[in-house]
Image (tube, helix red, strand yellow):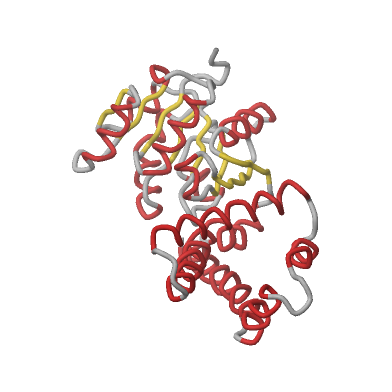
Length: 272
């Protein structure tokens, strides 16, 4: 069943939990082939992994020793410390990092020269197996490493391979993007509530509208402008609403948010 090998997690946050759940649900592995190290104070993560049937410990060395693929899912600021700790036992292992802003160069410098590295940018909808992930290969990562990474990430959503130079704008778009969409859902619901809808219904309808619209753009492969025009009747309510958005600078504001977030990612990457 498991051709990928044993999988370990250094760090047990929500993304790590989502990945573990997705890998098991997709049939890529079984819970007994997974192991995770969790900070002793993080009882919620400890319990979440244990509920999946995953062996959960508080030390990092056994995770690396007992895994073929090691996910680096600790906070970015502690990645160099954690990797330096396991460097002596990192030979011939594949390390997949989901830590924001930590470059391939940093990962490779803090591991054995015989370790292989892949850098991943996931996003939080991975928690409901609807994530949007991209990955970058390190110098020693093999074609099989890339195939395994693709298969694993597709268990929690979509996945594409990219060049590392694209990761900052991708982080600003799909990494930060859920926050922008959540604000939009909240704003859509607020407008509907002002017009008389119950709050819970407004959230349900707004979230489903965003979900369905995203599916339509992705699956139809039509230009978003064409799909917008299909909804917009002459002198109709949609046209009136769109005029308000354009008058208030909606398009430039959203595009500007992605640009600002990209610049911030570059600052963080540079500091790291």
